[in-house]
Each structure stands twice: as C-alpha cells, then as structure tokens.
Length: 301
Image 1 (cartoon, rainbow, N blue to C red):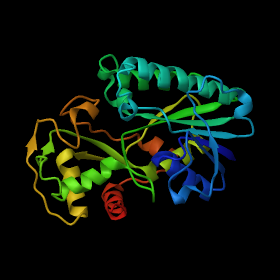
Image 2: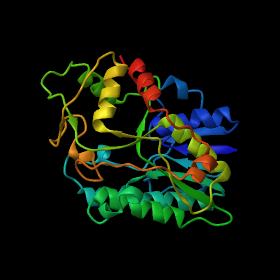
Image 3: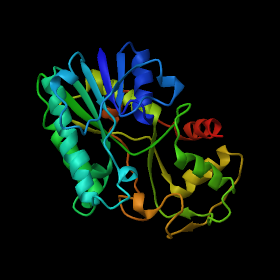
Image 4: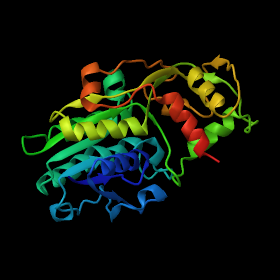
C-alpha cells in the first residue's frame, strides 16, 4: 500500500512510518518541514500544510492509504493573541481537517486513519465546557461522517502518548527528567492529584496498522494502555532516572503537569479499560509504559 502520513515527521507519525515501512507499506511523510530524526530520513518526504485551502486532489493522487497525525492542540495556540482558542481550533481542526479528508477521498485514497483524542469519549461532559475538547469532538465526527464503501475512514482516539525518536526534540520530556532528578530546584517537587491513561507511540503505531487493515468505516476506537495516578507516573520517571521518590500529592497547579493541559478537569482521575475486542482487532501491545519511560529516559541527554 502506498501510504501518506500527515504529521509523519512527529512522534506518532514517525513511529507509524517506521512500523508501516517494516510491514511493506511504501511510506511518504508529509509535514510543513522535513524530518529532524535520522530514523525518518530514509522515507520520501512531501511538504504539505493540511490547513492550506488551495490543496487539490491532484496534490494527493497516487496514494492508497492515509494516516493523519497532525490535528493541533494547546501547544500550537497563537501566543500573540491573534486568535482566540475557539477561533484557532475552528480554523485548524474543525474546518481544515475534514476538508483535507474530503480532498483525500476525491483523490482516490481508499483507507484512512485519523488520530484523535480520548477526551470526547472519556470526558463527554467537557465537550461543551472546553474549546479543545469541543474541537476534537466536532473534528472526529466530521471526519468519520465521510466514511463510505469507497472511503474507509476510522479514528484512533488516544490518551497521553509517550515515546521518543532519535533527533526529535521533545522539550517537555527533557524537562520532566530534570524535574524528577532534582535538577530544577526552583520548582516544588510533588505530584498533582488525579491521573490518566497512557499509551506508547509504538502501541499507537500498531493500532494504526491494525486500523488500516481491519478498521470499520466510521468507527471511533478508544485505545489505551495503563492507568496511572500522577504520583505513580512521576515516581516511575524518577526510578527510570535512577532516583527513588515518595512524592506528596497536592491539588496545586503543577509545574510539569499544569491544570491547563488537564482537559478532563484539574485533579481528575481518568481510568478506563479499552474494549477487549477492539484491542484484539487493532493488535496493539499493552503493559508497555514502564519500559517506554525507561527507553525515553535513556534516549534523553
């Protein structure tokens, strides 16, 4: 299968590219700029901005499959005040993503997977309260509504995704290692209340492969690996970095895991078990988080 990966130079898209390449796909990465990671430089690359309203079906012809791992979140919000969060998400997610999928359909792509967020499924009460969760909900619904007998599109809705690639800069993870290692003495060392589900980028890549093979058109698959409190998560990071911590749990805003990224609500404890049948269908590994944290810590300077 000739497969185009939008957001293919990032963490999720990059892991998907590597796995799909190993499975015999002819992979082309697409993003605004070429890949940083040496692990991705063997793949074909095409400069594509999915938000570009001038994209036409001719720009996407020749591909059989599509993986979309580029919908935007709080990290890309304009810092200059030029757009409100509602305006930004409306433009780059609610409008641009379904428009891109429609162009892909018209270009003859037959299999597509959209990487979404778990929030609309695990915290539906936040859809009308939070502009990001609302955007993810609206975008996911609009993309899946394009499914047909000729265009099999489904979504993989993932929780917090953990992983690394050589040469790919993930500043938050480097800061997290420094934090649990006591190298940021100006920041209070504690764990926030609550917790969430985590999954590795490797497992998401496996789920993408499974969805391209067996995904039901129009289906939203909620994936996940391990439920951890934030105390458990941070202490696993510390152990991987060679430190033993017993962190106090506080309701305060956390320097590494602030309330602003807790879209299920500050101090919320998110815990769920993905559907066993769907997990088997998508064929992704679980119980991977401790090993993935260790790999990430080892990869960081």
